[in-house]
Amino acid sequence: MIRTHYSTQITPEMDGSSVTICGWAHEIRDLGGITFLIVRDREGLAQVTLFKKTIDKNVLDIVRGLSRESVVAVTGQVKKEAKAPNGYELVPMSVTVLGKAESPLPMDTTGKVDADLDTRLDVRFMDMRRPGTKAIFRIRHLVLKSVREFLDREGFIEIITPKIVATATEGGTALFPMTYFEREAFLNQSPQLFKQLMMSGGFDRVFEIGPIFRAEEHDTRKHLNEAISIDTEASFLDHEDVMVILENLIVYVYSNVAERGTEYLKTLGMELKIPDLPFKRITYDEAVDIVRDSGEQIEWGDDLTTESEHTIGKTIGEHYFIVDWPTKIKPFYALPYENKPEICRAFDLMHPRMELSSGAQRVHSYELLRSRIEEQGLYADGFDFYLKAFRYGMPPHSGWGLGLERLIMTMLGIENIREVVLFPRDRRRLSP
Ligand code: AMO
Image 1 (cartoon, helix red, strand yellow):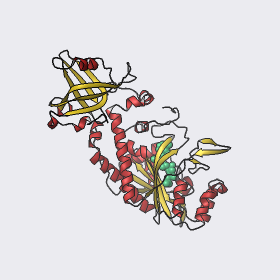
Image 2 (cartoon, helix red, strand yellow):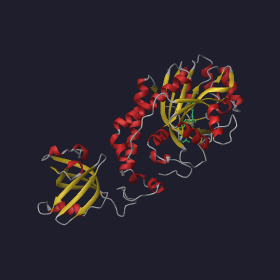
Image 3 (cartoon, helix red, strand yellow):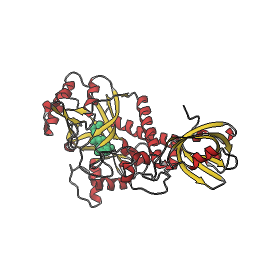
Image 4 (cartoon, protein in one colour):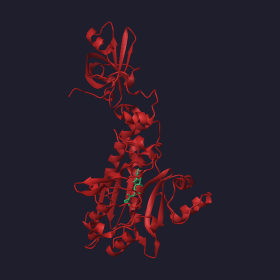
């Protein structure tokens, strides 16, 4: 191991001790009598100071000859210096170039020169070196960790289901076809059917964090063709029970990011407001009334447009649920109310800006499920592997799918979903 410390692990109190840091040559300032090399590592910046009078000439030549963004290892003595980042500087004994960077650079990494998102995504490896981009992905890590922690504590077992599948699950969104030897297969739109099979398998509570593939043509700031969905499924719970789990999860994630991600939030120049519990619940009918009151046209049974979502979001102003949806616009697996089958036990979790999650109590009667599949114009025999599980003891169950990227973008007030994905897949982008 070359590195002894990250830049942020060194303190002024370590004055006199010898350390080795590794990172990128962020900036080189040669003032004649004194030369500064700012080294950037994953955690922050360190100042390396070379006094011409006392420094070994070889070391000085290496630093003067360095190109920006080259990778270096610096071994030096810690010196207390109030004006330097983190209150110390390093007086180097040796500087080794481990990876030379060519000039000119494909983009600026200091954050001083603005680059548009497309340019940044084309050279994402460079973009990741910028503090703002790094902060987003450090927060993404915290979010994922918090989700796992929370669901584990609530008794959910993590599963991973196939992404190459034979059938659609989410009517309405298109599938990506692929060749699977001599057959046609698809990239999975959702782990929906598999997570339900786990309920028949007696796992009671499962979750998956994995990719979902949607062949949606539209090119918007909130859609990806490959997104990450946090999916849960739980037996012996109804839709209201799993809504409580969902809202608690959201608040847990926000609180954790606020607590453990302070420095990343600071880098992004923001303070996180933790939503209040419980989230407001409005029915689909109430949502329609709000939309109509604002002067927009909407028929009962229509899905909400982006414009309608914004109108309702402005009226409510915080996270909220829309419940009791028309059965015909929800997937076949959503359970209709027994006494009012035109509406079902489905819900959407909304942020004022967009939908974050949808879920439902599921149909668990084999006969009803089969007829619901047929009513939606789907070929029930194609779902044989799924339907079978409902014939041999399926408990009542409920669940939801939460879009990871939407959760993060709304939490951080980020406009474009691509900002929170390392290598986004959209209508135009397939590389890198
Ligand atoms: P749904 O299709 O509503 O539900 O997806 C769940 C959540 O996943 C996110 N999401 C997307 N994010 C970015 N780009 C996309 N193209 C995209 N599509 C979906 C959204 C959405 O709310 N099987 C059900 C879930 C369930 O009932 O358990 C489902 O897939 O945040």
